[in-house]
Amino acid sequence: MADDNDEPRFAKEKHLERRLRLVETRDRMLRKDRSEERAAFEEVFDRSTLMTVYELMNKGEIEDIYGVVKAGKESRIYWGKAPNGEELAIKIYLTVSAEFRKGMLPYIVGDPRFKDVKRDSRSLVYTWAQKELKNLQAAYEASVRVPKPVTVKNNILLMEFIGEKGISAPLMKEVELKNPKQIFRKLLTSVKKLYEGAKLVHGDLSEYNVMIWKGEPVIFDLSQSVALEHPNAKQFLLRDLENLHRYFKKLAVTVPSVEEMVRRATGEQV
Image (cartoon, rainbow, N blue to C red):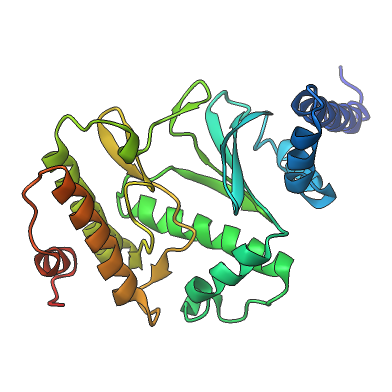
């Protein structure tokens, strides 16, 4: 029969095991030890971020982190796995970019969900991560094909990995669409579901923020998406639809006018 002390001892052993795994992950990422790689690692994994990764491991949200699959000015996306073996996209927002912070404000100020956000760097980045999770949840519940959200902690967002075995699905701009007219219709339907179901406007929709996976368009990067009450929501929607109109017209797809696209997406005239 197990001793009553076995449970705390087991918890402590798991705690140490996860700490060890975090150290191993860090060491694996730095194994090549080139100065530019080390600098890139240290830019992303400051002490606070490492502790957040550890917390997510300790809670059983992350089992392992592998290589980076996408690197941008605002964030890095790593391929990882959950304890159940499911592939994860681990999005780590950088906490040091002044340009990034400046770019966030037009999408946060005016959004009624984030009235009391503090303006210091770390608070803004944490809010931005929370914002993307909330937007993904709302979109997912409205049956928009987006990465399934998992959780967020500080500047780290966990979501479904779109792709397989660490190879992410290609962007729409990178593939030759077999049926571009069908993809256009599906994207316009997604914009409508976002607007009517999730009460959101994407805010940066283009061929750069759509992946094609198993023949279907998957919309991603919803961090800048705004609620319909945002003062610039209509302006952002118009820009999204203009981007789709331009891209698919370039592919020789017969598309309706932007005004008609707005009407179909919202039921309203421009």
